[in-house]
Image (cartoon, rainbow, N blue to C red; front, side):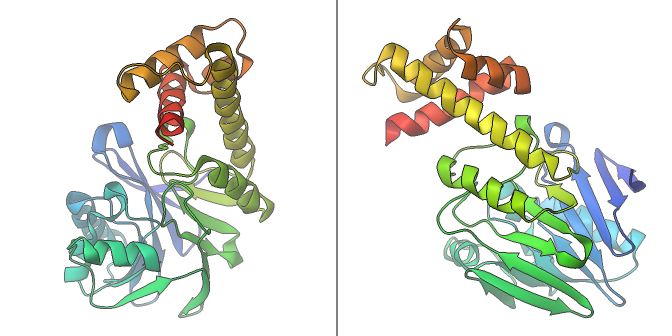
Length: 284
């Protein structure tokens, strides 16, 4: 439904409006996140900095497609596939916009961050030329401890980072499952028309229901399996125990949550996610 204006090396760029473009990256082939371009009269703002190579590619794409310099870079969070390319944009003199927590972590970790940076504590409305951005964070961790949600109200559009993604691309590493699930409901109620996800294809508001259903299936699968084996059945290395737990849950004839997760995402992905969430559970 969107015009593709660029395709190279497993990167595709789609024109969403006269001003906003979505950059899709094939994760399996490129290990890059998705991103975006907001085009103004004299410059461009980019969303996320996937890697050094990715940021250099984004700079070249900007020159080729728009013929304008990059002046701002919005960052959804600080995971490597969203922020490792920041030094490229710093060298270009771009201003970084991200959560205050993320910018502080990057600086403390020695990352080459732009001299000019805007840190968002809870929420902010930023006017760039004639475009309004409404930015907000969620207390506590969602996908990460530093997620920033970037919205363009006039377009009913949101860039979610990895808090919203296609099911195979969900990563639960340092997220807070319950807070994440409730956040999906909060954003769903905002009724955005266009959801620019961190990994996967563009979604509409119906994807929140899909992701919430999948989260509930994972949670049900874990609770059912814990009931079946008991809380203390975690002998051996945590990773091994989590994998065995996930395999047992999926192979159970009396675990509808696991069956639903497999139906929605496939057996390998469901197994990986059940193991990851159970691993978080037994480490608490």
